[in-house]
Length: 112
Image 1 (cartoon, helix red, strand yellow):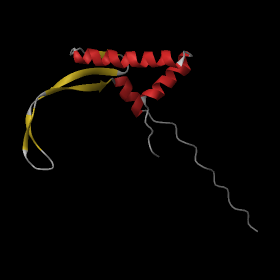
Image 2 (tube, helix red, strand yellow):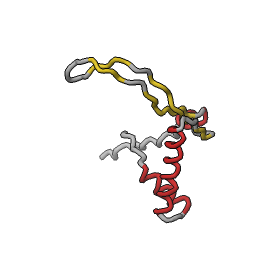
Image 3 (cartoon, one colour):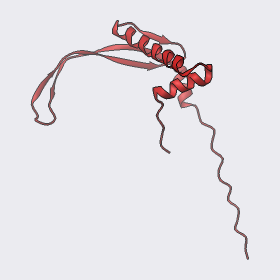
């Protein structure tokens, strides 16, 4: 079974459905949440959403890398990267046992 992908458009649709707000207002809500997280990370703030997880940035050291095509050495500068740490509750939700799907009942074929 292939996993599906939840997109930003799906989140907007869910906000529309739950709040019964117009699509445009739902888009503004989703965009505002994402922009708030991005701005906080740019300012090196930590975002904590209880029961969900926390966002922060981590510093990556500079290193010497290689160009995969030519094999030439390349300086990779230090940089900050976003990092998400899920909460214990989120981990428990994700790892909770799903209800088993009912097995297809197999009836014996009529003999005749």
